[in-house]
Length: 429
Image 1 (cartoon, rainbow, N blue to C red):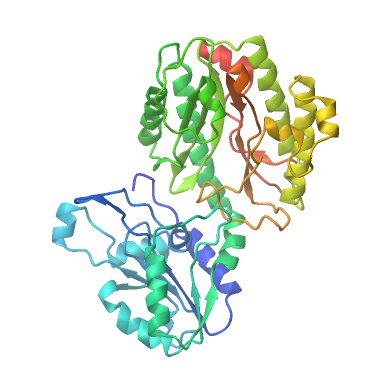
Image 2 (cartoon, rainbow, N blue to C red):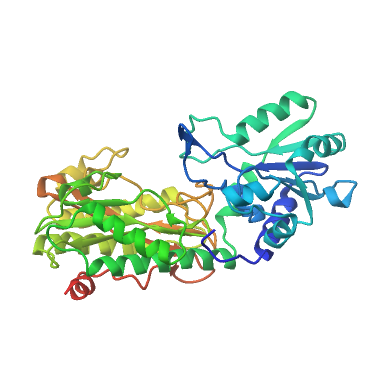
């Protein structure tokens, strides 16, 4: 991995928190992701399942974590099963985790090779009543491909139909949503790398540059600073492309007078950052662009102040909608009559700001969190309002990442990234 080693105390702590939520006489099983084929002998780069990484720090394919706190044998209370490394694998793919390396990474003493899984698991299954299985229950999940985890669960239930199967997700949704200090430090590192990428392109952008060239500049800066790469598919959208919310083609020329919307973020040690900034191709905003930009910035700053313990996500978005309505009225984009006659299910402001303002962020860019429960200190949220005006040829979105504090305003992890019109214009000179 490109990132530097993480102290295994974080993963030991995460397992203890999970164990505290388990029912008595239960075990929990977590699988790595597959390496997905493309065609012939080609595969996509491996990306670890975030749940097994959160609980063990293991970032390797064909790995399985078992947690069984009430096991009669102490060596069975937490176990890793790994693909056995050998000289041939070391030559062709690079060395895989040894048992000693796995202990150093995870803090787990009991490490077995995968070929021992069936016999060891059989013994544990005769001693437990309940099994926590891991399913994807994220509110945005849309999974068509059968995952390694899903295949394992299907096989497990067929082999051991008499057990009671429980869900890990309700536990993980709450645990992962509140970050430890070590996790916030890793997210900060991802944000700092994103900052370096953004500052790099400020001196690069000019009329005639192509969107994919800007993406390449970010890639260069991210990788040279030990990032995994992009936390998500980058959006480099010039001109009217910015009005396509998930524009990822990044293949247009950037022209004089246009704005470029850049929704990009580095991932470091699998932890995400999520930034959006606007840059004028010519180095200077027009008066109208500046007017709309500052309106979005005011909404972002005001919305961020609402991220405090106890805030309800749905109510927060209603209040942000009110802020945006006032700005759109001042910009002449909507009328008082339209607001008066609006459909409460789709308010007037939604014509120009049709997406949500905030989502949890962490190991996943759209991270775990129960949206119906109050916000807590230690949660990390994006704040990303936007105004999209196809008829005027541009759209604006501004986004920062915030940590909710016990008291006071949230901490902006992207406070060092230039954001005002004046800052951006001065740096582009």
